[in-house]
Amino acid sequence: MDIPSLLRKEVLWSRHRLVTLCFLLLILPAFFATTTAAFGTVIPEDAPVGIVAENESVTDDEIALIEGGLTLFSEPRVYENASAARRALHREQVYAVLEVPPGLYDEGARNATFTLIVDGSMVPFEQPSKAIQGIAGGYLDREFDADVTVEREVVGGTHSLSEYLLPVFLLGIVMLFAFTYLPYNLARERDVLDRLLVESSLDAVVATKIGYFAVLMLIPTVAFGAAAAALNYSVTLFVPGAIAVLLLTFVYLAAISTSIMILTDFDTVGRFLNVAVLLAAITFSNLVYPVGFFSSVRREIARWIPLHYSMIVTRSLTLKDTPPSLYGDYVLGLVGFTVVTLLVLKLSIERYKRTI
Image (cartoon, rainbow, N blue to C red; front, side):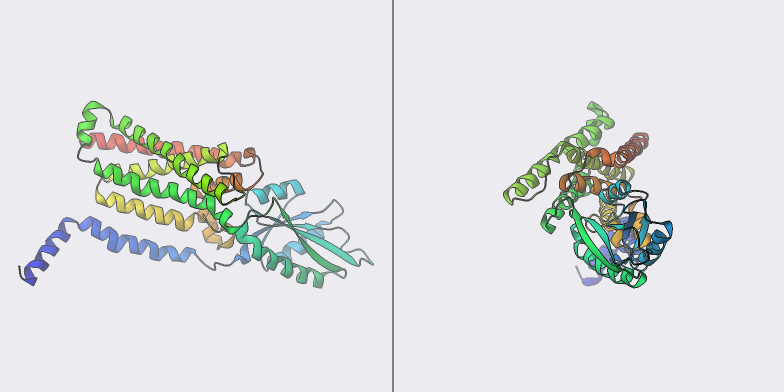
């Protein structure tokens, strides 16, 4: 064949795959190009920092002055007591807590010591918290007559970056399996699906597949746990609560990816769309860096994505010595979202039944 004939063949091939090519060459690039607008300034200047009085002697005026000053390099949030502030710290609603001592306006006050409390498991905030300590110390020393010092207190123990990343990578494996291998498996069975439906219902086929693959997710959990033990990491991956959240996460991700495959009639475009959803989830869920490091737009987007809370709960239960009940509302929200995705999956199956 000559070159014009070969080109004609490629054009004909493209016409038959117009939807797929439009998705890959037009819709997907446009989507990721527009998402860059949500990044803003990606520096930890807007990280949420809690403010709490050391005791009842601290006045509202002192708290207000400190809150105003912290807005220059953070997003301050005032809490009524130390218990509420530390709860917010463990739940990653704030990334540091500044305890305000009393008597800042007292005549003759010479020394005042603030305490900046940070969570040792939040490894990416290790160096930024030292910067905040220095900046806050300089600002407060200028505002008050007393000699101000800011001491940094690390709670919950410290972890290396490798330990911090272990649950992140484990959740990444769960996401990768749900959005790539599961759709691939469904696409391969497209030709035999009609024969399977003669012997069983599509509901049973899909439920069995998702349940079976969910159990398979225990294998990488064991592998990660064995690696952590071999490397002497202070990470506990075999916490029942963390494993339950990982399995729950796989179920709702698998329900989403399966719904996409069914709605696209198990076509190749469904697999591409699943990859796009995977990349978008990784981009906006803030699995590695805390959400407080990013712009206000990114923070709001992440807080609407269930994966963000799956990561918080998994990371917290494996790295921190905190009770699972502290994240009860997060888990309840994940359960509710899972129910919604399963309902969407059921509706997708019913639609597919009517088309065959």
